[in-house]
Length: 309
Image: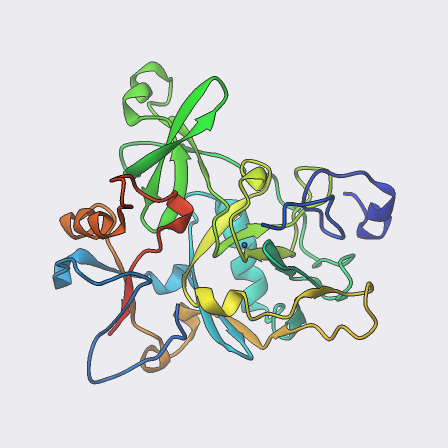
């Protein structure tokens, strides 16, 4: 294990637990619960037909509530993508570890980093470090709805949504050529993604993580994505910008409380549903997102509709 206190002596690539190398610094609504009607929320005209069967309930065991001064961020966890990281996040959450932990390093147009009990970027939990889960294997049981492609190596790779998670993936048909019948895939660091901080050792993630304020493709396959924000995207850019130790006047925001929905009494949970990305309604929704030239926006610019019942 690399000691966090020694990280200042290391030259690292992109995001580390205590500091980052030079990063790109390029770039909904407050969640309201109502018991009397369903509220649909999306950053687009709701000119698509989405019947009740087109909406997917979140699994309370894989739903994380992060309460900030500004409201609640709701994150869907993906144990099928990063089982070790999700298990660590759940364990620490149930210990109350993340309550009142600060956002010690926040960069405009990039990310909000938190999860350090010391509050200066050098700390972690008492749990063991976790092995990297930068990519995953995808079979027929993990269908992806493609919405475009991105350059990758000598060609392009398809990008789309697995549930509500933006991913890049080889086509399922290539599974016929692999021993396990599956294909390679990885999550995309779009706004709202939750990903694990680490030191230069790829297997050094522990308790620190970050929530993306904007899109940063250079982090893809370099850091483990374990969740995605379903509700509260607007709150992510309200978190105060600054780095602990750089500015003596910087007073960081805190996570007031972090809990799994499964641990909240049923009557107090927020009943959030996400539009199914393998539904006809989602295809209709995509049509509303088309640009004037008929092409789709970048996948990171497509915000999935959700609703509160």
